[in-house]
Length: 267
Image (cartoon, rainbow, N blue to C red):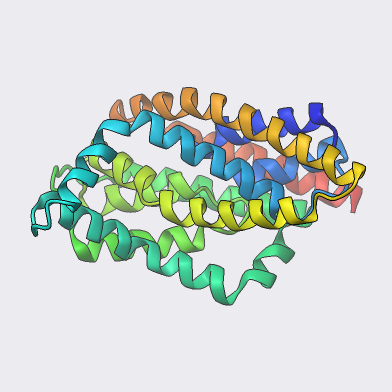
């Protein structure tokens, strides 16, 4: 993967991580269109996801700082309870990552038709937000677990993590602002942990010129994903608050159909 290709894919990741259109699906489509070789494992995908985690930390720094302060207050207050809910929501995706890592990695191998089908599924999930319940309650522990289960499903390339988790929260009666905040914060620990592990493996493998070039490409993609992620995160918050998430279902239907057609054509 060249540095230019990494930057393009990084920007694609940053923009689509927060918009409900599946960043992993778009990364796979981008790899296919750019004919990127040697990037069919999950390393690059994990690293640019880590970049967008950093962008979440920048956008939600005030909330994160308040949660940290509450945690070290050693009281069962709303901040500590919120952290407990976030931790509960992370369990399903953590279990999937631990026990099905090889099977997950196998999905990131340019399976364009499969990605297209999952994009259409994402479109259907987003379309159902028209049934949004008009409530403004907080996220409960049961809600956190349910949302966490949908995040585990969204590990499949083509299924939008943000779209699925936010849509689930809205269906449960969580307010738009709280649904968006919880969706973005619940992904911090799982992806950050996976990013650290992948970065460790990458540094250990970077012993030759070819590996050094690959590492430079990963760094370029990381920076591109971070900068575009900050922009997209703020944009997504505004879109959800205005009730505009439904319109992305049409986009997913169209891109999904194109992906299926393209995958059949080259397959």
